[in-house]
Image (cartoon, rainbow, N blue to C red; front, side):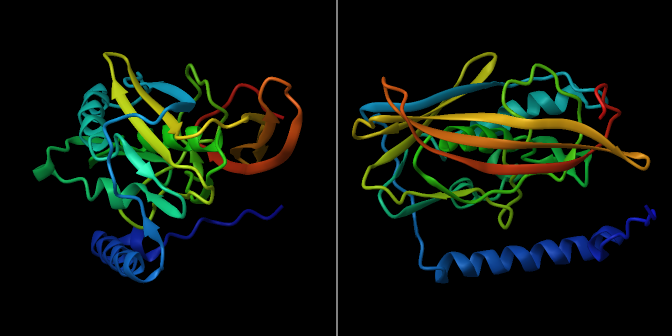
Length: 272
Protein backbone atom coordinates (compact mmCIF):
# COMPACT_ATOMS: atom_id res chain seq x y z
CA UNK A 1 0.00 0.00 0.00
CA UNK A 2 1.43 3.38 -1.00
CA UNK A 3 1.32 6.01 1.70
CA UNK A 4 0.14 9.48 0.71
CA UNK A 5 0.45 12.69 2.62
CA UNK A 6 -2.72 14.32 3.87
CA UNK A 7 -3.18 17.54 1.95
CA UNK A 8 -4.48 20.49 3.92
CA UNK A 9 -7.64 22.20 2.78
CA UNK A 10 -7.33 25.89 1.90
CA UNK A 11 -9.46 26.70 4.97
CA UNK A 12 -6.84 24.94 7.15
CA UNK A 13 -3.91 26.95 5.85
CA UNK A 14 -4.86 30.40 7.14
CA UNK A 15 -7.48 31.72 9.54
CA UNK A 16 -8.87 34.22 7.03
CA UNK A 17 -9.63 31.43 4.56
CA UNK A 18 -11.33 29.47 7.33
CA UNK A 19 -13.51 32.41 8.36
CA UNK A 20 -14.40 33.12 4.73
CA UNK A 21 -15.36 29.48 4.16
CA UNK A 22 -17.56 29.44 7.29
CA UNK A 23 -19.27 32.70 6.31
CA UNK A 24 -20.11 31.41 2.82
CA UNK A 25 -21.49 28.12 4.14
CA UNK A 26 -23.55 29.90 6.80
CA UNK A 27 -25.00 32.30 4.24
CA UNK A 28 -25.99 29.39 1.99
CA UNK A 29 -27.71 27.72 4.93
CA UNK A 30 -29.63 30.89 5.81
CA UNK A 31 -30.91 31.00 2.22
CA UNK A 32 -31.87 27.30 2.24
CA UNK A 33 -33.97 27.80 5.39
CA UNK A 34 -36.17 30.14 3.36
CA UNK A 35 -36.38 28.25 0.07
CA UNK A 36 -36.22 24.54 0.94
CA UNK A 37 -40.02 24.23 1.40
CA UNK A 38 -39.64 22.61 4.81
CA UNK A 39 -41.95 23.49 7.66
CA UNK A 40 -39.67 23.88 10.68
CA UNK A 41 -40.83 23.06 14.21
CA UNK A 42 -41.00 26.17 16.40
CA UNK A 43 -43.81 25.75 18.95
CA UNK A 44 -42.89 25.23 22.60
CA UNK A 45 -45.38 23.66 25.00
CA UNK A 46 -44.56 23.39 28.71
CA UNK A 47 -47.25 20.73 29.18
CA UNK A 48 -45.85 17.29 28.44
CA UNK A 49 -47.51 15.02 25.89
CA UNK A 50 -49.17 11.93 27.35
CA UNK A 51 -46.87 9.03 26.39
CA UNK A 52 -43.13 8.61 26.75
CA UNK A 53 -41.33 6.99 23.79
CA UNK A 54 -37.77 7.00 25.13
CA UNK A 55 -35.70 8.55 27.93
CA UNK A 56 -31.93 8.82 28.26
CA UNK A 57 -29.34 10.72 30.26
CA UNK A 58 -25.64 11.53 29.83
CA UNK A 59 -22.95 12.56 32.30
CA UNK A 60 -22.18 16.27 32.18
CA UNK A 61 -18.56 16.41 33.37
CA UNK A 62 -16.01 13.85 32.21
CA UNK A 63 -12.31 13.98 33.00
CA UNK A 64 -10.62 13.66 29.62
CA UNK A 65 -6.89 13.35 29.04
CA UNK A 66 -5.21 16.61 27.97
CA UNK A 67 -8.48 18.58 28.21
CA UNK A 68 -8.83 21.50 30.63
CA UNK A 69 -11.50 20.56 33.20
CA UNK A 70 -12.71 24.18 33.20
CA UNK A 71 -13.95 23.65 29.64
CA UNK A 72 -16.11 20.80 30.95
CA UNK A 73 -17.67 23.05 33.59
CA UNK A 74 -18.19 25.77 30.98
CA UNK A 75 -19.95 23.16 28.85
CA UNK A 76 -22.53 22.70 31.61
CA UNK A 77 -23.38 26.41 31.39
CA UNK A 78 -23.60 26.20 27.60
CA UNK A 79 -25.92 23.20 27.73
CA UNK A 80 -28.15 24.93 30.26
CA UNK A 81 -28.58 27.91 27.91
CA UNK A 82 -29.18 25.78 24.80
CA UNK A 83 -31.82 23.47 26.29
CA UNK A 84 -33.90 26.52 27.22
CA UNK A 85 -34.43 26.94 23.47
CA UNK A 86 -35.33 23.28 22.99
CA UNK A 87 -37.25 22.15 26.05
CA UNK A 88 -40.87 21.37 25.21
CA UNK A 89 -40.45 21.72 21.44
CA UNK A 90 -43.38 20.18 19.56
CA UNK A 91 -42.79 18.42 16.26
CA UNK A 92 -46.11 18.19 14.47
CA UNK A 93 -46.80 15.92 11.47
CA UNK A 94 -44.82 17.07 8.38
CA UNK A 95 -42.61 19.36 10.47
CA UNK A 96 -38.81 19.25 10.56
CA UNK A 97 -36.72 19.74 13.70
CA UNK A 98 -33.54 21.77 13.13
CA UNK A 99 -31.12 21.98 16.06
CA UNK A 100 -29.27 25.01 14.69
CA UNK A 101 -32.40 26.93 13.72
CA UNK A 102 -33.85 26.52 17.21
CA UNK A 103 -30.70 27.08 19.31
CA UNK A 104 -29.22 29.82 17.15
CA UNK A 105 -25.61 30.99 17.02
CA UNK A 106 -23.87 30.51 20.40
CA UNK A 107 -22.28 33.85 21.35
CA UNK A 108 -20.72 35.34 24.48
CA UNK A 109 -23.47 37.99 24.43
CA UNK A 110 -26.04 35.22 25.00
CA UNK A 111 -24.03 33.94 27.97
CA UNK A 112 -22.15 31.12 26.26
CA UNK A 113 -18.66 30.33 27.55
CA UNK A 114 -15.62 28.75 25.96
CA UNK A 115 -16.07 25.00 25.90
CA UNK A 116 -14.37 22.14 24.12
CA UNK A 117 -14.83 21.76 20.37
CA UNK A 118 -13.38 19.10 18.09
CA UNK A 119 -11.76 20.15 14.83
CA UNK A 120 -9.96 17.67 12.57
CA UNK A 121 -9.55 15.29 15.49
CA UNK A 122 -8.13 17.83 17.92
CA UNK A 123 -9.73 19.48 20.95
CA UNK A 124 -9.82 23.27 21.01
CA UNK A 125 -11.65 26.10 22.74
CA UNK A 126 -14.76 27.58 21.20
CA UNK A 127 -17.64 29.73 22.38
CA UNK A 128 -20.59 27.45 23.04
CA UNK A 129 -18.42 24.35 22.91
CA UNK A 130 -19.99 21.19 24.29
CA UNK A 131 -23.59 21.61 23.12
CA UNK A 132 -23.03 18.66 20.77
CA UNK A 133 -23.82 16.58 23.86
CA UNK A 134 -27.45 17.66 23.47
CA UNK A 135 -27.45 16.63 19.81
CA UNK A 136 -25.96 13.26 20.76
CA UNK A 137 -28.76 12.67 23.25
CA UNK A 138 -31.44 13.79 20.79
CA UNK A 139 -30.13 11.48 18.08
CA UNK A 140 -30.28 8.51 20.46
CA UNK A 141 -33.89 9.35 21.35
CA UNK A 142 -34.93 9.79 17.72
CA UNK A 143 -33.31 6.51 16.69
CA UNK A 144 -35.81 4.83 19.04
CA UNK A 145 -38.78 6.31 17.21
CA UNK A 146 -40.50 6.30 13.80
CA UNK A 147 -39.17 9.80 13.08
CA UNK A 148 -36.87 10.16 10.04
CA UNK A 149 -33.36 11.54 10.59
CA UNK A 150 -32.72 13.73 7.55
CA UNK A 151 -29.46 15.46 8.46
CA UNK A 152 -26.79 14.07 10.75
CA UNK A 153 -23.03 14.54 10.88
CA UNK A 154 -20.50 12.57 12.89
CA UNK A 155 -16.83 13.31 13.56
CA UNK A 156 -14.53 11.50 11.14
CA UNK A 157 -12.07 11.15 14.04
CA UNK A 158 -12.29 9.27 17.33
CA UNK A 159 -10.33 11.62 19.64
CA UNK A 160 -10.48 9.95 23.07
CA UNK A 161 -10.47 6.40 24.45
CA UNK A 162 -13.80 5.12 25.76
CA UNK A 163 -14.49 5.97 29.37
CA UNK A 164 -17.77 4.71 30.81
CA UNK A 165 -19.24 4.61 27.31
CA UNK A 166 -22.84 3.39 27.30
CA UNK A 167 -23.98 4.09 23.75
CA UNK A 168 -22.46 2.46 20.66
CA UNK A 169 -19.50 4.22 19.07
CA UNK A 170 -20.59 6.63 16.34
CA UNK A 171 -24.21 6.96 17.44
CA UNK A 172 -23.94 10.68 18.20
CA UNK A 173 -24.24 13.85 16.13
CA UNK A 174 -21.94 16.84 15.82
CA UNK A 175 -23.11 20.45 15.41
CA UNK A 176 -21.44 23.55 14.05
CA UNK A 177 -23.73 26.51 13.46
CA UNK A 178 -25.42 26.48 11.10
CA UNK A 179 -24.46 24.32 8.16
CA UNK A 180 -23.44 21.26 10.20
CA UNK A 181 -26.92 20.74 11.57
CA UNK A 182 -28.98 17.94 13.05
CA UNK A 183 -32.44 17.55 11.56
CA UNK A 184 -35.26 15.03 11.64
CA UNK A 185 -38.72 15.08 10.06
CA UNK A 186 -42.02 13.86 11.42
CA UNK A 187 -43.58 11.84 8.59
CA UNK A 188 -46.10 10.22 10.94
CA UNK A 189 -49.66 11.25 11.88
CA UNK A 190 -48.58 11.74 15.51
CA UNK A 191 -47.37 14.76 17.47
CA UNK A 192 -43.98 14.42 19.21
CA UNK A 193 -42.22 16.46 21.88
CA UNK A 194 -38.67 16.74 23.26
CA UNK A 195 -38.09 17.62 26.92
CA UNK A 196 -34.82 18.28 28.76
CA UNK A 197 -33.69 18.85 32.33
CA UNK A 198 -30.45 18.77 34.32
CA UNK A 199 -29.34 17.69 37.75
CA UNK A 200 -25.92 17.91 39.42
CA UNK A 201 -24.50 15.02 37.39
CA UNK A 202 -26.49 14.44 34.21
CA UNK A 203 -28.30 15.94 31.27
CA UNK A 204 -31.68 14.21 30.89
CA UNK A 205 -33.88 14.07 27.84
CA UNK A 206 -37.04 12.35 26.71
CA UNK A 207 -39.15 11.97 23.60
CA UNK A 208 -42.92 11.94 24.07
CA UNK A 209 -45.91 11.40 21.77
CA UNK A 210 -49.60 12.27 21.93
CA UNK A 211 -50.91 8.76 21.11
CA UNK A 212 -49.94 5.31 22.33
CA UNK A 213 -47.53 3.49 20.00
CA UNK A 214 -47.94 -0.28 19.88
CA UNK A 215 -44.32 -0.89 18.91
CA UNK A 216 -40.82 -0.23 20.26
CA UNK A 217 -37.33 0.12 18.83
CA UNK A 218 -34.07 -1.57 19.77
CA UNK A 219 -30.77 0.00 18.64
CA UNK A 220 -27.55 -1.99 18.89
CA UNK A 221 -24.00 -2.33 17.57
CA UNK A 222 -22.48 -4.97 15.28
CA UNK A 223 -19.01 -5.74 13.90
CA UNK A 224 -17.07 -3.34 16.12
CA UNK A 225 -13.30 -3.46 15.76
CA UNK A 226 -10.08 -1.43 15.77
CA UNK A 227 -7.74 -1.90 12.83
CA UNK A 228 -4.30 -0.61 11.91
CA UNK A 229 -3.46 0.64 8.42
CA UNK A 230 0.20 1.59 7.97
CA UNK A 231 1.00 3.74 11.02
CA UNK A 232 -2.59 4.84 11.71
CA UNK A 233 -5.40 3.31 13.75
CA UNK A 234 -9.04 3.20 12.71
CA UNK A 235 -12.30 2.18 14.31
CA UNK A 236 -15.36 0.79 12.59
CA UNK A 237 -18.78 -0.60 13.44
CA UNK A 238 -22.36 -0.85 12.30
CA UNK A 239 -25.44 0.36 14.15
CA UNK A 240 -28.68 -1.54 13.57
CA UNK A 241 -32.28 -0.76 14.42
CA UNK A 242 -35.13 -3.19 15.05
CA UNK A 243 -38.82 -2.40 15.25
CA UNK A 244 -40.85 -4.82 17.39
CA UNK A 245 -44.44 -5.18 18.53
CA UNK A 246 -44.80 -4.08 22.13
CA UNK A 247 -45.35 -6.96 24.63
CA UNK A 248 -45.20 -9.79 22.02
CA UNK A 249 -41.73 -8.72 20.77
CA UNK A 250 -42.61 -9.75 17.21
CA UNK A 251 -40.01 -8.40 14.77
CA UNK A 252 -41.54 -5.99 12.25
CA UNK A 253 -38.44 -4.45 10.69
CA UNK A 254 -34.66 -4.70 10.95
CA UNK A 255 -32.08 -2.53 9.19
CA UNK A 256 -28.60 -1.06 9.44
CA UNK A 257 -28.88 2.70 10.03
CA UNK A 258 -25.25 3.80 10.49
CA UNK A 259 -21.92 2.50 9.23
CA UNK A 260 -18.87 4.10 10.86
CA UNK A 261 -15.22 4.22 9.88
CA UNK A 262 -13.13 6.78 11.77
CA UNK A 263 -9.48 7.52 12.32
CA UNK A 264 -8.42 7.00 15.95
CA UNK A 265 -6.28 9.70 17.60
CA UNK A 266 -4.91 7.37 20.31
CA UNK A 267 -3.44 3.89 20.40
CA UNK A 268 -6.25 1.41 21.13
CA UNK A 269 -5.70 -1.71 23.22
CA UNK A 270 -7.61 -4.22 21.09
CA UNK A 271 -6.32 -4.14 17.50
CA UNK A 272 -7.26 -6.57 14.75
